[in-house]
Length: 477
Image 1 (tube, rainbow, N blue to C red):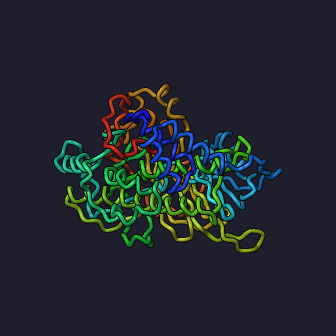
Image 2: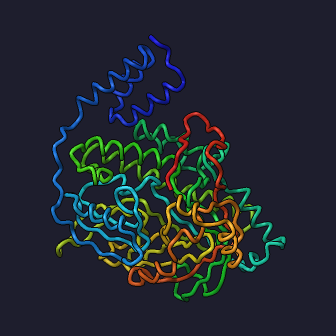
Image 3: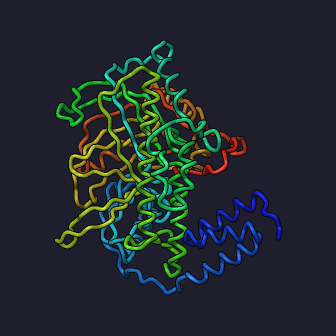
């Protein structure tokens, strides 16, 4: 036999991840790989895949899509409408809605909300599973952020820079010494896939990665006296973060999206990314558990960041808010006058049940909003998750000049650490317009103005540091 080379192990692991084979079958595949070589192992995998491969019987779509409500229609691109309409043709679809920050994604548009019957669609959850927002409020005047030359500002900047981690590859990792209960081995035993992700979680907890993720100091203005945070009207210092489940969520999303598509070869090509897993089947149950684990990890990620930064700054919080998107929930809605349990996918949409608190951020320099849901049934109790992109990343890099970004930040008194032109405020829809389009979905109880913002440096990929063995060097956005 030919002795496997290091790259062979990586390639074969990727093949197995996409194969759909079970634990015992994977074990046999690895045995063949180690004893008889790559060719014998590949032959075994292909034989097993052929054995289980479903027949490519056409899956019948609805001739006419179900109706769905739209908020902010005038500012949504045609591609998002096309994707949403296609999702409403699926035989498992029960209801849907499109939020005012919507733009084209994969399968379901970003800003799309979709309710299905006993089925979960991995791509309708998204690649960065449970990407979320967290805001912590401190009983300190935000005036400490007004003058970058003062010692108080420098103190907050140091606390932010030394206790947050951004970047791709090894730049986005720490030494694996941060402790949190979510890292306990007992949480990572459900499947071989999940067991293999614990190492990634150990090195990535408390990190923010790349893309549109950030951690920032800012000024929060509480505008309603009767707010559920129990805060008096006025201004406070606050820390706001946006990040998700990093390599953990990416690997889960990629594995189960690929699996779902492989199990549904009869699904029309224009909706292939909307392949689903039945929740009463083994694959659907596995994904559901893995998705929830990614959600718990993403939440822990934020808590570690906030605790480390606050400790370094010498601050004690008086209130906090946390909410996530890119997730699926079991909820009960009314369909034709009757209650029905459904799976509600919110891909880039904020839960907005009656009285539910949430955060809808603007850009690195524009206002974000603290909101309370009104529980509107037509929106599937959802709202936008931000302003939404007006330009693709490539278009933003080509069309926005560094001086334009710098001038915009200077006018608003914002200090930026890192960040690229693709995340410039000009690349996004105006948050004021997006908020105005959903006045019937949420009440505003406060506003957040960024002042000291940290994001990933826009560095070439070839400059990435290597990652430890077993750590997933990929993430969603």
